Length: 199
Image 1 (cartoon, rainbow, N blue to C red):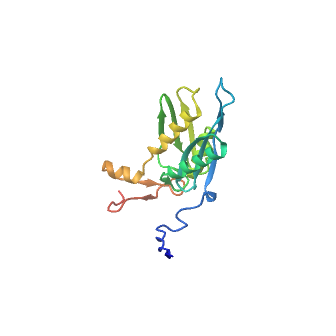
Image 2 (image 1 turned 90 degrees about the vertical axis):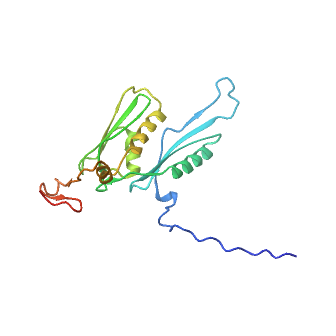
Image 3 (image 1 turned 135 degrees about the vertical axis):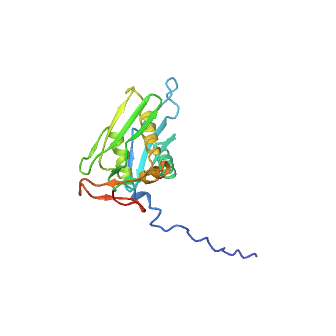
């Protein structure tokens, strides 16, 4: 007989704390639905599940699952949300650095940063996505045709977050000087980039 030898397994490159389990993520189900054939109701229905998952520290993902059972569609949406995670730089870990704008077809969404303590104000789906990102102070509004599908709204919101940029990198790309002012702490205190002096 031939003896099979166990080859050494490759070591994990990332630590376990770097890749949290699904239980440690904030998860939202949005407008799950079931569709059935109009003229052949005996056919198996199709389930659609939209999931939003995030770690509340700047990372979140969006996934959609479609399958013949709700459990399978939910699993597909989980895998898609985990695979499509993006990072959004937050300003002082509570809001965004600048106004975000996103559109899908003729539907537009604006997400405006607000000072600490303002809270989450806007449509429920924007609140859910911002909560998954860890954005706590903002004001959001829709513009354009309002009677659109939920998927159109989510795509517009997600396009807004895909446009989010790091303010420091944005200023460096333009060749401008970045001045971060904290008026809530001290109206005259500024943090200037390296190499710049106070005027």
